[in-house]
Length: 94
Image 1: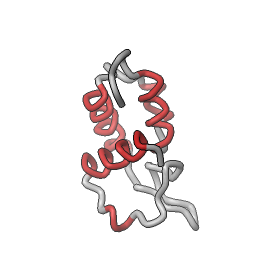
Image 2: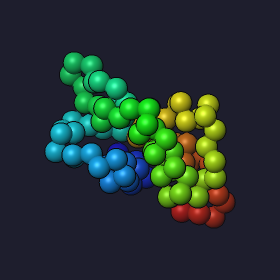
Image 3: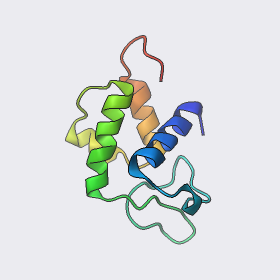
């Protein structure tokens, strides 16, 4: 994972109070929501968690309001990190 992906991952773990010991094999492309397919790992977050996740992203990186369309695309740590990088206010470090 990149440093931003690692930071996103840690903030999700902290915000969602996920037991990191259950995420062996989780990487930046692993799903955040729903049951994992055989051979993969998921955080198994639900729709309520998605709202909390978006609020955390908005506050942590000062992004302003994230649209519902953008919110539905945020399914992996990598997608979230890419979104943050693309929408980060000018001059702000990720």
